[in-house]
Image (cartoon, rainbow, N blue to C red; front, side):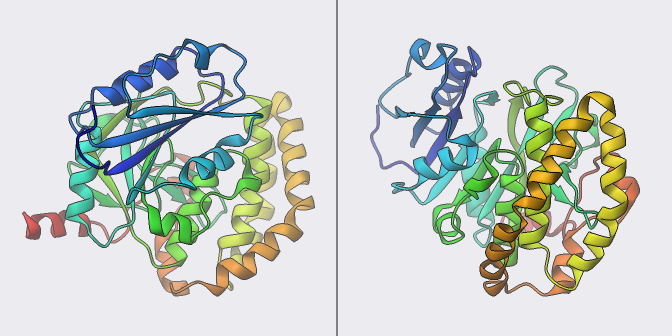
Amino acid sequence: MRSVAPWARVIVVNHNAGSLLQDCADALAAQTLADFEAVIVDNASLDGSIEALSLPDDRFRVVLARANLGFAAANNLAASDCGTDWIITLNPDAEPRKDWLEQLRRASVRYPDATMFGSTQIDARRQDRVDGFGDVYSIFGTAWRGASGQLMTTLPDGDRDVFGPCAAAALYAREAFLAAGGFDESFFCYLEDVDLGFRLRLRGERCVQVRRAEVLHVGSAIAGADSDFFIFHSQRNRLWLMAKNVPSPLIWLVILLQVAVVPLVLLRRGIAGWRPALKGLLAGLRGLPGALRQRRQVQSGRVRSNRDIARMLVWDPRKALRHAPHFIESGLAERQAAREA
């Protein structure tokens, strides 16, 4: 099947994804761009999804983990021996359009100074709705997928610069990914992509959200968006994300705002979500010494100014409440594409 060296390695981390894993693999095999390799890391699934998987061709291989390593560590494992120039992360509950890889590759040529690229994530259950259009981070210490839940018609027609890509369907330059240390494995899963995007941003890297690179995404199909597992990890990792990455003196403002945000988060979770949210916050506080040790290393490699970072964050609480997208240097990506066309 393979006639030329692969352009990118696509990494799919599976844990009890059921039939969605086969759908994902089949959609990859049908791509208009054929020069890729795919590594499927199975995190000790118990649902038979890996046994039932039929690999489409010799571009695909499976790596069996002996335990559930988590999303972060499993991706790092598959990236550790990568020989391609680009690394792609793709969730097993994501089904890419046929030209998805082709659109990402074209974008990597249009924007040679960018090392991160995000995909347009469409809600697989309601395909007139956005699942995500780039990761967003706010001065309130919260993160979200931009435009989540909004109508597809609200998205811009072209590419945009965003804070970082959602790792459900993201493209990273291998050298930049490895130089930053890949995903933080202590996160296990959730917000590890925002953390990596933040660290790369601090190192001066750029992220472009590619409008025409589209995937259908079920979203939280495995763990569940309101599960105790999701609530615990998202609350815990949110503290570590802030402690590691937000530069001083901005971090003092974020901490101050967290005093107001945390009680609101607990209240919004209701009785059912209150306990796992509180457990996550307490676990985050216990892990702060480790996050602060990492902070010294992260901040020592920072080249972005405080002003640059501040401009990348959302400051409007209304935008935070409605999970609005946030574009950095709005229109820059489109202007550059027009010049190079």
